[in-house]
Length: 127
Image 1: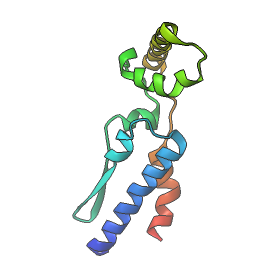
Image 2: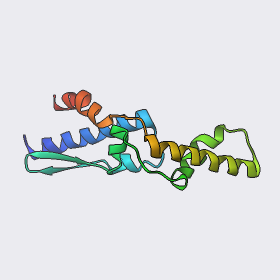
Image 3: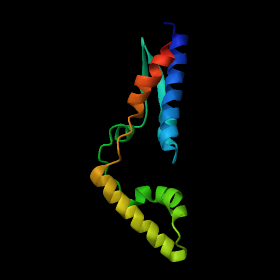
Image 4: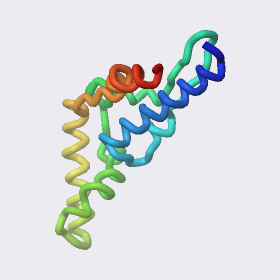
């Protein structure tokens, strides 16, 4: 396989991972999606991304604080809550505390986007 062909495959794998990730999970900051990259190392195509992709892939517990998820709560949940003014800020803090406690104890549910890409998309890419 030529280096040019390897680059084409690397690009397609990165695109497939990003597409599967954002299709199923949307984007909050896009940090994980934009961190996905590849490099050619001899005869290998090496895919890399942020370490926390493991938490998404396997659903392992992830120590989280309310402050870390407050932006997500304000963006994704609070628009659906019918509370105004000072009460809205208090409600957002309470939701963030509850979610952080749950995520720390149980972690996110597994979403095997890497394994799904390898099993379903990679054979098509290699054709």
